[in-house]
Length: 198
Image 1 (tube, rainbow, N blue to C red):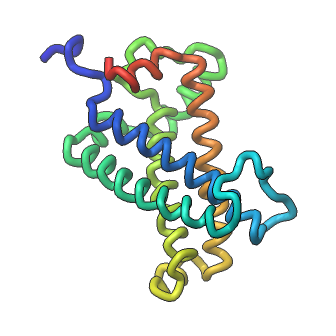
Image 2 (image 1 turned 180 degrees about the horizontal axis):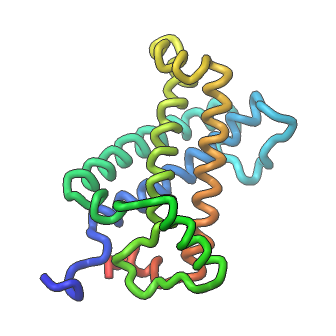
């Protein structure tokens, strides 16, 4: 098949992308309600942007979305690794390339003519969010089953530190989503390719 016929994003990628997006939204909103029950800092999230109605309901939503994120995220990572896509799309990557593309972006000179190719900033951001999702899952396991994962709990600095790790990993995920949506708004063709594949 030629590049013109091959989809930019295969079906498995589009399905896992949208399922991951749904899981992240559900987990974030329910997580904010859980946070409100025992805040780490001197603020709470508004009830309008939380999910679950009460602590028990929020925990149920969080666990349901957790299984979706874990299973779907695993499929996403395995498909990326198994097809060689992770190497083709995200590497090579260097700090110099990231800085150059960031400069080009701030000057309005970063091209998106070929949606098949990720620029260095996109590569770094997508790799970051994969690692961040793994950190969210690991710190979440400590919060959920602290006694069953003592080594993981200690590696994360104890239960209270794991709470902070989970919170800041969630904040990083939300920041990624906000920047991602802003970039999609600037280059709307990317949304069409994630829906249609072409």
